[in-house]
Image 1 (cartoon, rainbow, N blue to C red):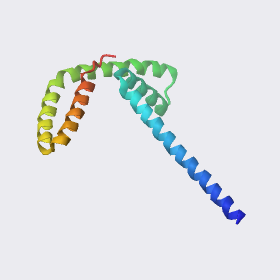
Image 2: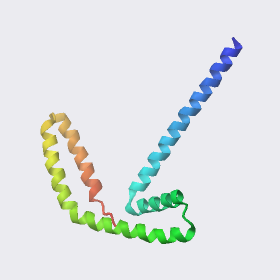
Image 3: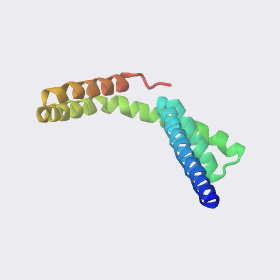
Length: 127
């Protein structure tokens, strides 16, 4: 009896540890993604750190990489400014089609999702 209780306790501790590890990993990944997507500059920083780690870059290479990543970030911001009107047209068209499929209660929720998307993309991305 005592041996089976000990085995159950060991399994329970193992299961709780595994669950805590999974939740911790999930939280860490979500945190990193949120940070990386919080601003273009943060994303450039994450890209630089990840490339440095994965490629084993030395200090001099990291210093040379940072301006390349930053230049790419600026070029992408310029491109986004150019294509943003076309993207908005595509989104507006598809939103109309989606809205036509929805019930009135779903349309209200969908309108809120659209509002949040527009609010997010209206933020200046010059950082």
